Amino acid sequence: MSGSPGSSATSSRLLRDAGLELGEAEGRGDTGGTNHQRNCNGHYSGSIGRIAPDGSQIQSSKSLVLSVPQCCWSRCDLNSRITEPMDMAAHQPSTAGRRRVSGFRQRRGSKTGLSITSAFLFGALFVATGTMIILVGARVIEVDPKTVHAPWFVLIAAGAVFALGGLMVWSMAWTQYRANRRRLEMARKYGEEAALTDYAWDPRGFEVPRWKRVANTLGGALFFMLFLSLFNWWAFFADGPWPVKTIVVLFDAVLIGVWWYVMVLFGRAVKFGGSRIEFGRFPLRLGEPIMLYWQAASRIGRITEGEFTLRCVEEFIEQRGHGKNRSAAVVHEELWSTTWRLDFERAAKMGTRVELRFDVPPDAPSTHLSAEKPVFWELEVKLDLPGLDFREIYLVPIYAR
Image: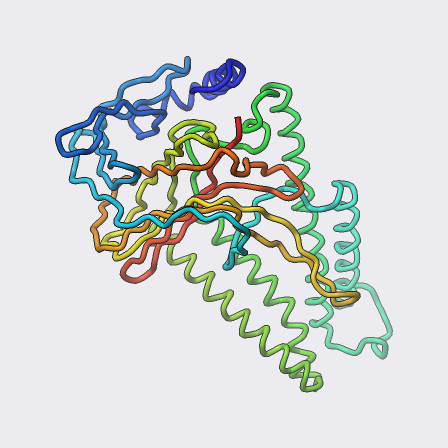
């Protein structure tokens, strides 16, 4: 690693602390650096190095191909065989300026907008209210039936919505508490390195779990369906007014879209499994070449088109509406991006590896995931395939010096 002596000492200390894992990574393809030499075909080839517990580099039996100037497609195996490199066909120039990023996106920050105590009390109010309504609907708590203007099962569903909403707030408060505790602990050990206190990075790379997002999206879809069931009863079983019916139908259409997305995520998890990227170094620095290694997921097969986009994103909560109609939504805005495109058909076998280089300006925003308005860098991989397309986003640790 390059940088200040303090930064190098911190990096070495991190590697020593993680030495057992990194040392045992031999044979799994975990890379910490590369030794390159140029061959007659105009590409750089060399051995992939790994980081030992003392911070030194260990030579590996694997090989790689690095395309000039910035990107390649290569195949690495245990027998040092190199298949033909495949250069990306086009590069979209970097763009700077705010642009909202659409689609289903995961919230990255750990802040709730409330203190941990306030969030716990706020969630407790919803849990207590929901529990009370459930007990009334289950007739555990006796009330005059004449004061109840809905079926008992509707009361149980309404109580479940309140209680689950409170549990969600508690979950966010617990996440914030754990993140705060971790930051304090890491600041005590590595106070001079922001990358180590900001987020629980794996210094080797970033892996997307196979089923976690499917489970989270499924839970959100079930909660949304339970919430809409109350309004569907009001609109179509309690003879609600036509404006209510119209709005409910629109939200039911949204719910169908959410369930379709759940099925797509499930299909991708079954077809591709988990996936990961590896970092050329840790942390990556603004103003220096950003080297990333994407490991092709299983069953990718033949690719017709593809994009590899490095993007800087700011996340914040936006208040919408007024009075009783006021709501909050998580917004992601792109601050800077650059894209490599693959616009010709190519086969990709399991074990195929894409090495990517991006040039990021030194005055670009630094990662700050622990801020009230988190800023982070991500690599988005989009591949057009027969059947289900591949779509994944990976966090990238790019920090200022």
